[in-house]
Image 1: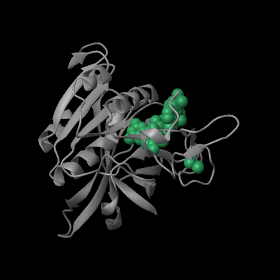
Image 2: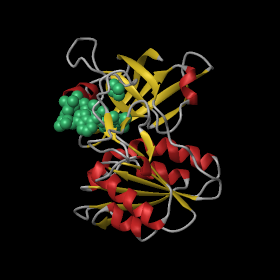
Image 3: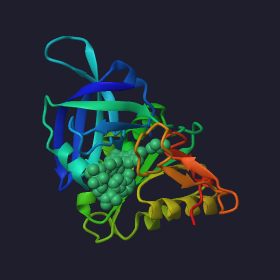
Length: 268
Ligand SMILES: Cc1cc2nc3c(=O)[nH]c(=O)nc-3n(C[C@H](O)[C@H](O)[C@H](O)COP(=O)(O)OP(=O)(O)OC[C@H]3O[C@@H](n4cnc5c(N)ncnc54)[C@H](O)[C@@H]3O)c2cc1C
Ligand code: FES
């Protein structure tokens, strides 16, 4: 659905990373972890296209002026270009136009499996709402978070407050173990687990191969350039597992995903 929303807060968490809370219609409260929204950063025509962001959190808050609970949605974003720079300049009370919820989210899996979340940089964003849903279901959840340096590791205490066991790795060793998050992950993989991953493609490819080698089911959430967000422009397609020049097999990230079983995709 398309709706007008109001910015409640827009806070810089670490250099270039912001967390923004916006008002949302009550129906958005039933959004699934892994779904995303498309946001028009300005009323003017530049940038023309909406920008996609994963749902970092959805919940309710009490307004000062009445006693009914109101719904909010949050995103966690990194400033990388014009759209996100404009977003970072928004303040409490500013209006914004949203399309949400979009795409297919994570499937939570079987009860009793250990749930392993793997996030690279801002790929951590959709994993918090997922962690909340898994914890509410009584699941044991572990988070493996990776980044270039300590500034890329966001909201870890929020996960810990949910009771999630966290492991951190940074390329430069400024927080957690030094090295790739996949190296830390590999030491903890085994039977009875299910992986949910979001982050850069090389990390997702490595996690996917590792999951296959250990026989652990794995879902990945992809990012792609998006124009429409609803399956109309085919601008966001990625090759599926059986893709070749002779037999094209494409998946539409916005409509078939952004969450896929890792075996559905071609990683080479
Ligand atoms: C389903 C989905 C969920 C996403 N969730 C989040 C999120 O939770 N938090 C977050 O910070 N970002 C997320 N992104 C990425 C985010 O949409 C882009 O960073 C944003 O659109 C950039 O807009 P911009 O105008 O600032 O940058 P632009 O000026 O458009 O581009 C700046 C730079 O960023 C690169 N870039 C832009 N868009 C993408 C993209 N989709 N994938 C890879 N590189 C890109 C460009 O190549 C360029 O180098 C998500 C993307 C998708 C498809
Ligand atoms: S963004 Fe248009 S089809 Fe996916």
